[in-house]
Length: 434
Image: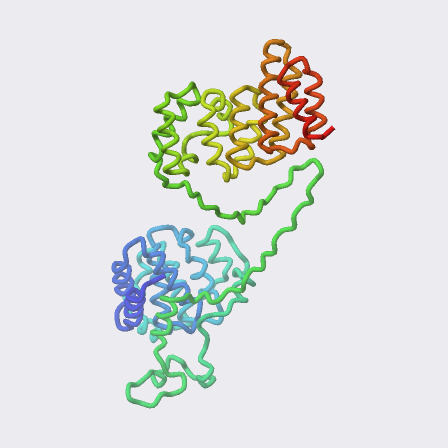
């Protein structure tokens, strides 16, 4: 819409009653740039639709501006041609206004019909002779100036239901002329009924609101949803109330423990030198939390056990309180039985308190490995290792033999030809568990 400054400029031009209409229209059109002509005409059309917003002379000038803004085009191309024709055929409008509009329409086809615009709006109204004018029907004007013929003016129930922003002053006595000078506000005088600045009111409406009024609210209910068929995929709306977890490793110093990581990576591939082993032990002793940054994972544990069992014991001892320690135990139980794996488990039993279930599962796995091996030499060697391992656990009271007595006794009988198995069997006898 128009700004406050533009609205004031328009009203100043409209109130120039003594100037010729043609001069007012030219001045106003030249004041506004071409891309603002439609906004100007839209504002004037809103004022003209409310018959009380402008007085008689101002309405004539406003209609002249609507017509002159598009006079270079054919009448049907004027977006406000319907308003002009409807007003020219409105019986409630003053006859001088209807005649003025008919002359505007006829001036489009001939320059000789523009003489009436060289006089002021007030002079046109004073010199108007109603007997010299004939008023044609709406259909006739539409056929002459419009592309389509509408027998009746467009009537919108939606617009009619709107609450207008401008309405007559209820304090104004019925039958009084609202344009009378006696209702003009006089500084210092006592305020009368209906007094006030109508121009300022209309300007404020154009600047901040709109003369269209407050439209009724459309009620748009949500359309019903179709039922989901058996063979149709149903759209899932997952719950997005996720719990935020803080990443404590974010922005951590990645250079920390670089030497230990390099040594652990070497330890996975082969035995370390004594000096390297001592460096790993010292670094982990000085900062036990380095064990979480050394690069060891449960999947890599078997390689460390076979190549450097002592380092594996040291690392597992420091991981005892880690949430992943159960995964390390699972890998240790399921890996192939060897001297180094038994050495690691044996040292762990004396260093920390291992879960009883883990110890039982490891012993069961050792016995099963001895029974399933086909190579007699390797079998005898592993049986000796297992028997020595079990004797160490029993003497150090790491395990309760009662839980595994039947299984261990059967193992000793099966391999009784081996001296270490016979020794283990005699140890069981001395404990009085038979």
